[in-house]
Amino acid sequence: MKPSASPSNKQSVSPIDTPVIDAKTQLLSLQNVSYSIGQQRLLSDIDIDIAVNETVSLVGPNGAGKSTLVKLILGLIDPTKGGITAHQPLQLGYVPQRFAVPPILPLRVSDLLGQANKKRLTSDQRQFIFDNLSLTHLLSRQMLHLSGGETQRVLLARALLDKPNLLILDEPMQGLDPDTEVWLYQFIDQLPDFLRCAMLVVSHDLHWVMRGSRRVICLNKHICCEGQPSELAISTEFQKLFGHYYEQPYVHQPHACTHRAPSELEL
Image 1 (cartoon, rainbow, N blue to C red):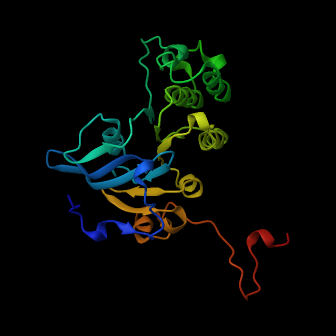
Image 2: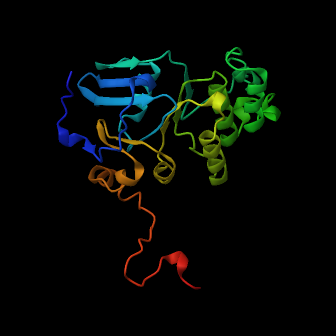
Image 3: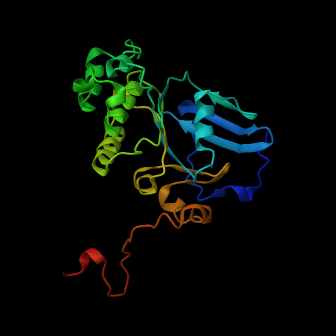
């Protein structure tokens, strides 16, 4: 079915920004997906294709429908219109935005990680995750007593231990200090081959999204615009939503004039 939204609702940044995904590399497709509760429309006419091993960043203001979209992909709710097609058997991994443990529940790190399917990875591959996420000394700790950074490392490990082919990261850097953010993003970006997978990263960190992503989708109950970060940053729809939050870094363009970039000035 053809999307009912008018062409002006979604800005096409450039023909090269949204890659054409070959059928052999398709992993998941959302086709004309909408979701409503009663008369309230939370998402309208969403069309997204995610390829094998592709990383897609999803941005949008509060109330834009990002969490609803994640729930649809996870299968926690069903679309009220349209369909979601898995082109290959899906093994989903999910790192939630929040993870609250009731004080009366004695949940240790080892208990949570022990729920993963031990047949998905070899013992050496599992140990790689433990070592690189610095988890060994946390195994006997209660989840309730972990810091924000420790909790995120444990939740990421729990997702990776099931060797997903689609990893959904919902605001993975929320509450982390800058050094931990940098370290965790580097770890995610440099996963070894045996852990490589498609990723959908939901983030409010526009500077990281625009610097570290190859494909960005801007959501505001419908897809406003999508494409490569360099082009998306100057699109009208993106500027309307984020212009007061995000400013492009200065990039010096050499030409006939004699002025210099800030980094070239003599102090």
